[in-house]
Image (cartoon, one colour):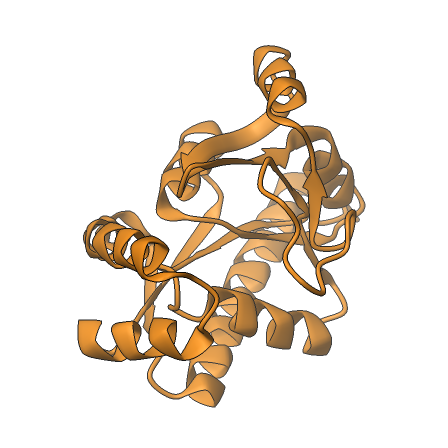
Length: 199
């Protein structure tokens, strides 16, 4: 029987929308799901580890990687570059692992162009007021950076309509369950296609 190729799953939300938290919970409970590690030109935050959270690279090296076609998608977000290494993702999918890309909407649309079979899931905040409250609660940005993120969030929420699935992140446990259900549906569909291709 032909082995099912791993899915490429994109999870996006505006800053403070909960994509990192939901991704962590999904990865803990799902052994066939692996998180793609992105490259970035920004500095590590407290507690972040190179190779686990991100590959931290200087801007000059990042630009060389763009030119050599090393990224599945890349974008400049909040003054820094972020990119998904193509070779690593392809190797995981070849093993049958489902790869989770926790990226912004700009990156999500780029992935969809390269791979129309990618599963795009957008996490919506219940309201803009709730999103602002969550960002303020994080206390990880100064006033100027916070204003940039809030401004960008408006555009990102509008872009969410291009995603196949949209999940409202009102209650964390329900949002995690909703995303898990989407993954289950997509895996069954993928397994069916693999089976049909052998007949």
